[in-house]
Amino acid sequence: MLFFRNINRTALLITIIISCVIQAIIININSPIEDKSYDSYFKINYKIEEDFIQRYKQVEKVAKAQKVVNKDEKEISNKKWRLEIESIGLNANISEGTDFKTLNKYIGHFENTKKAGGNIGLAAHNRGYKVNYFQNIKKLKSGDKITYFYNGKKYIYKVFTNYIILDTDWSVLEENNKREITLITCVENEPSLRRCVKGILVD
Image (cartoon, rainbow, N blue to C red):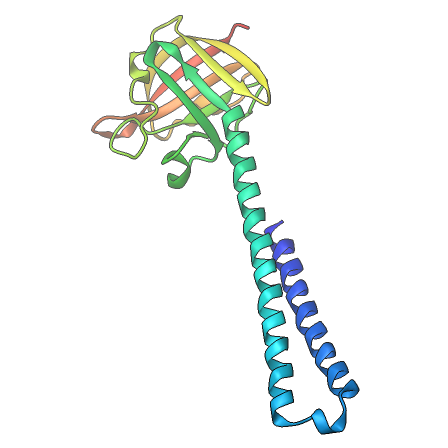
């Protein structure tokens, strides 16, 4: 989508330049011979440059406005996709991906897992970063409620297990015909281990 926007913007700028050149030619053709002095030539070109600058500023203004709209749409989307765990005071937005940039602002969603109707995989930091949304999931007990919001719907899960796994154990994110939510975070001072909390859908 960004590629096509850049193409449209470039095409618009080319159109503006061509129109300015055509305008200059028409002005020169229609001007009396005695007016075609250096001064008149300078004034014509100055006007063309001024027109071009004004039109370019309009293009920039539209492009910036579009960026703001896209950013607002993303923020609105993220607010509709979030996680709440009342027992540990967690209320945070979710975003696609588990890269460093995403986890510095949101709870991240494992892209190869379901967003609803299956095993939903989520990850977040627990300490030492800008945001550490999963710092207290180690305190979750069996029966604690996890509330998940996605696509305008609300899903209630109950914790049924909280345990430690190896960082190479990806089986916890596999589909297993159960409607689960799986929360993953690091274990303090144990780089080869991960904490895994699982909840089962009850509502």
